[in-house]
Length: 401
Image (cartoon, rainbow, N blue to C red; front, side, top):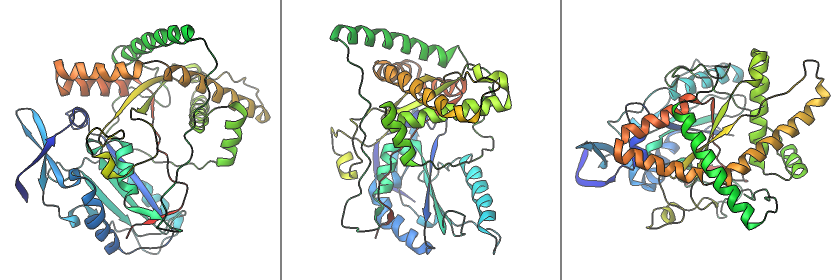
C-alpha cells in the first residue's frame, strides 16, 4: 500500500544508471553464524532496526516525465524475507553446494520494482563454515558499498561486549617516493591526461583480448559460480612490510597473479594477452564507517548514497618460463605485488578518476541517463574483471538487539 503525499528526494543519477534498460546492479552480503538462529529474530531485526536506518528501505521508485523519485510505501517484512527449503539431514559439504547454487541463482534475479529494493534470505542448514547463513540482497540504487555496509553494521554489535564500538584495521597507505614539487605536478598532469584518454578508449573502442576469463559476450544474466578463498593475514602483513606497500596492494597483486596463472593453465598463449581490471574507488574523505545519522546530515563528509568512480588498471603480463620450479613462485609473487602497487600508485596520483566522474555527468546532462548507463556497461563489457573491496571490523560480531 502506498502512503500518499509522501514523496522523497529524486533518485540520484547513479540510481538511474543502475535501474536503466541496460544495467541492473545489486549487492549480495552473506553473514555466517556460529549458532542456529530463529527466523523471528531476523524478522524483528528487519522491522525495528533495519527499516528505520534509511527511508529508501521503505520506498520504491516512481517515474514521472522520465524522472524517477523515491516514494514511501508500507513495507510487509514477510514479503522481503525468504526461507528456502533444502533436503533434510544432509552433510555440511552437501549443503555447501546447495548454498552456492542458491546464491548463484539469486545473483541473476532482478529485484521487483513493485516493492522496496532489498531482500533477506535465511539459510537454516549447517555448512562447512557456519551453523546458518543470512544472505542480504540490496540494489545498488539504494547506495554504494560504503553506505550499505554502514547500514548492515548498524544492525550488528560486538559479540564480546555490545557496549563497545566496532574497530577497524588501519587504512595507512604506502609512502610515495620523494619528488620535487615541479616533478609531482608534471607527473600528475601527464598521468591525468593519459589515464583519462586511455579510460575513454577502453570504454568505447578498445576491448580486452578474448581469454579464459573474458568471452566478449554480455554475461550479466548468465549463471555464475561463487567462490571464496581465505588468506593468512599474518602472511599478507609479512609481504606488506617487506615491500612497503598496503594490504590492498598485496591483495590486488595476488588477484592479478592468480588470474594470470589460471589463464595460462587454460590457455598458455593468454598469459600475455591484453587484460584490464576496472577498480572501483570511494570518492569520500576516507575514514572508518560512521553512523547513519552522521551520513544523512547536510554537507556530511561521509554522505549516504553512491559516491564512487572507477579506474582502468592493466593486468601485468606473466613472464613465467615453461620449466619454472615451485620454489621460484615466491619471487614471482613479490614481483607481481610490486608491479600492481606501482601501477595503482601512479593511477592514484592522477586526477583521471575525477574527470571520469565529470564525464559521466556530462553524458547524463546531454545524452540522458540511458547514455551514461550504456557507457558504464560498455566499460564493464570491454574489460576482463572488476575489483571492489570493503573493509570489515576486527572483532567478531553478533546480531543487534
